[in-house]
Length: 246
Image (cartoon, rainbow, N blue to C red):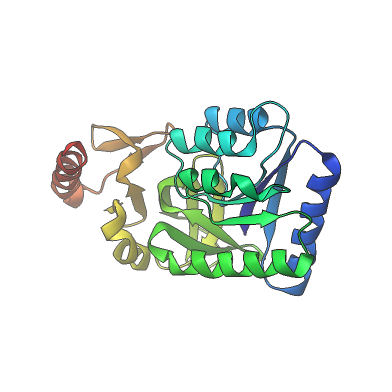
């Protein structure tokens, strides 16, 4: 599922874009979690408050207050670089200015639904090609796309009814899925993830400190380190910190 932000100061335009996304979802297996914002200030404040980031930002260029390009600059300045930005505008002269914020697409209004759908499908293909930055898990009845840096930990959960149940803990919620935790440890070891226990993988980016055989994470979680892994975990984290500082 893709998290999408639609930002336009005209409600009719916001609803139009939302309807096109819903229509595309009906035609394909793509799913969208859509949030709408009535101003650039509102969307920028969302990011400043450290809320979960979006995969796709669909921004009107001409808005009261800060315009779409200024909004995108603000979001990029907060170190949000993975969002793919689509600008909608009636004025093509803004196109060159939009390149400063690394724009995926610049579409002239009114946008024909089939053109819009074509661009979103191509964007989906782009995300699939960027696998190292994302992980796709099956949660309940849908696929969820998680950014690596949003994942705090992956835990094997005990369950009498579900075999190989896993919890993917992110900054704002926990997703249930199924899988072999050692397979995820192998697949993610080159992306700052480390298995610290037979049933726990952590993201080193979210480590706050180690103490008493535990690791303390950015969301307050206290996770046990397997006794046989204490030295490996501390050595790996030390190397990680040295690399980050350099």
